[in-house]
Image (cartoon, rainbow, N blue to C red; front, side):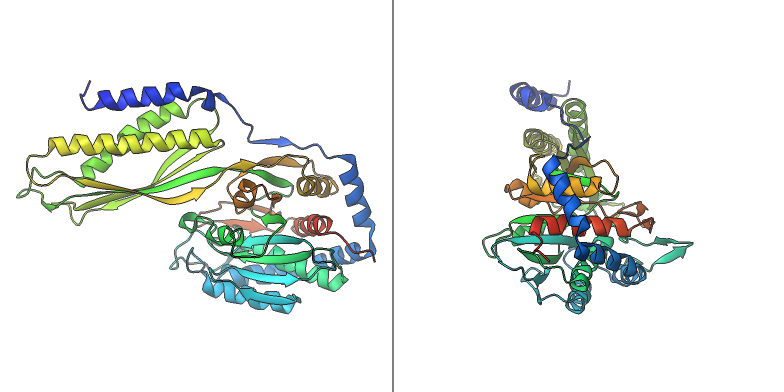
Length: 439
C-alpha cells in the first residue's frame, strides 16, 4: 500500500464507522399521497364556483398566447447572474396582466403584488427566470410539428408563462382572494446561482411570505414537499508553473487534481452504494496553458447531493480528505521549488428538509391533482422550495405539465399535451391556499 494512503484510509474508516447509523436510513424518491377528505371537499367546492370555472375557461382561451409568450421568453438568454433582459420583459408582462404593483428587488427578482381582501397573509407563486445555459447559447426556438425545441424552453420558461397565465385568469374572472398573492420571477435558481433569489426573499430584508408555491419539474401531478440538499465546491490547486522540460520536478497542480479525483471517486463510490441516496459529480475541470507547460493552476467544480443532511456532510468530509491526501502526496514528490497550495471554496449550499404530508398547502395541491383524475405523487427535489422547506415555511413545488424532455440539454423540448391543465391545477392550489372571497 502507498504510505500516503494509510492515514487517508484510516480517517475514512473512522468517519464511516462513527456515522454508520446516519446513512443506514433509506428514503423513498416518491410515493403516492393520501388526500384527507376535508381537502377533497374544499377543492370540489372551489371547482363548482362560477368564478373559478370562468378562470379555467380563460386559461384555455389563453393557449395560443401562452405558446407565443413561451417562445418570446425562451429566446431571451438568461444565464444565472445575467437575467436582466428576461426579467425586464417578464415585469412588463406582469404589468399588462393586471397586477396591482410590479417591481424588481435588489437581487433581480421580479415581483408582482395582487392585493387580497384582508391582507393578513401572503402566498407566493414562483417560476425562475434563469436557465443553465451560457449567454452565447443559441436559444432560438425550432418547430418540429407541434413540438418546440430550445434550451430552457421547459426549465423553467414554461413556469414563467404559467405564472402569467394564472394572474391573467384571476383578473379575467375577477377572483378575489383573502390573502395577498405575490407572482414572482426569481433569479439564481440554477447552477452557481445557488438559489440566491429565493434566499433573499426569505431573508429579514423582505416582507414575510406565509406560503410558497413553486413551478418547476415536469409531469402534471408531480409534487415535491421535500428538499434535496446539495453542496458545491470549487477546488483550486496552485503552484509556480513552468516549462515541462526545463522546470521538470516542480509540483504539478494538474497531477494533484487528478489524484484528488481518483481518491475521492474511489471512497465516495463505496460510501454511496448503501443507505440513503447520495450522489457526487466532478462537473467541470480546467487549468494549464499548453501541452508543454507545467500548469500554475488547476481547478474543478464538484456537486454532491443527498436525501439526508448526515450523508451530505459525510461525502463533504470525503472530498476534503481526498484533497489533503493529494496535496501532501504531490508536495512530497516534488524535486524542487515551492509546495503546492490548495483552496477549497464552497460555491453552492442548498439545504435539505421535509414538510409533513398533512400540511394544508401539500394537501391542497394533492387534492387539486386528484380532481383532475391523476393520483398525486409526493417526492423530493432541488428547487426554490428548498429554502422555505428548510425554514419550516409551508411550500410545495408543482410540475409544468405538457410533455417535455432533455432538461439542461441543448435539445430540450416541450409539447403542449393538455398543458392548460397544469395551469388550472396551479390556479386551484393557489386560490385554495390564499382563500377565495365569497362571490
